[in-house]
Image 1 (tube, rainbow, N blue to C red):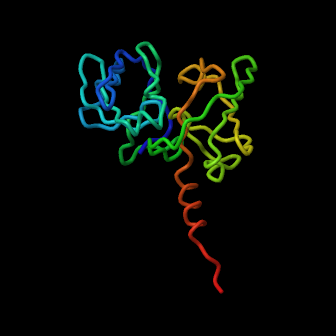
Image 2: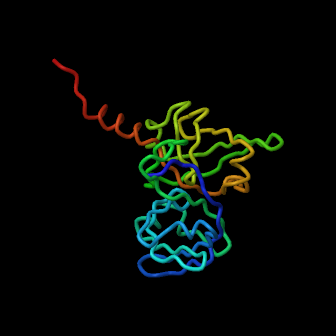
Amino acid sequence: MFTGLVEALAPVAEARSQPPGRLLAIRAGGLADEVRVGDSVAVSGCCLTCVASAAGLLSFEAGPETLGRTTLGELAPGALVNLERSLALGDRLGGHFVTGHVDAMGTLDAREDDQSWSTFWFRFPPELRRQMASKGSIAVDGVSLTLVAVEPDRFSVALIPHTLAHTTLGPLAVGRRVNLETDLLAKYVQQQSAAWTPPR
């Protein structure tokens, strides 16, 4: 479980095919000292298991399901990713509950920059619409954000200067794909609503 509060913006050192999956090595700097083999780390919103940690590098293996559902298959050396270690009991929950299980990929449809602030519009698959509500939460590339406006096929978020400077969202260009995870509570509400039948 994660919070969507990014701890480090880190470059990909290696992205190597490892059929049927892929090996990713991330240059995590000092954060690597806090991660042990077997720990869960959110890599741009995707929960991955650390398989090696040495000399500031964290290595992860991504399987076919992960590569097909997320942007991890598009990463190349030099690309930046958001990193967050998993929650420990007693930690403050500053964002929202994020599982690291990406629901779908979205696309940056437009960005409205106002000096060092921005409003982003993302397009998303229509099946996610019922899990979104204005002022609700969403994770975009692992970043906990508040939904501003929600339309049938796109939503907007307002980004503060800190988020733009310290996550992958700052340099994001229109047309680029991102990992989306809707709010966990919204998923359960939708599931229960779908199964509920009114009493006769």
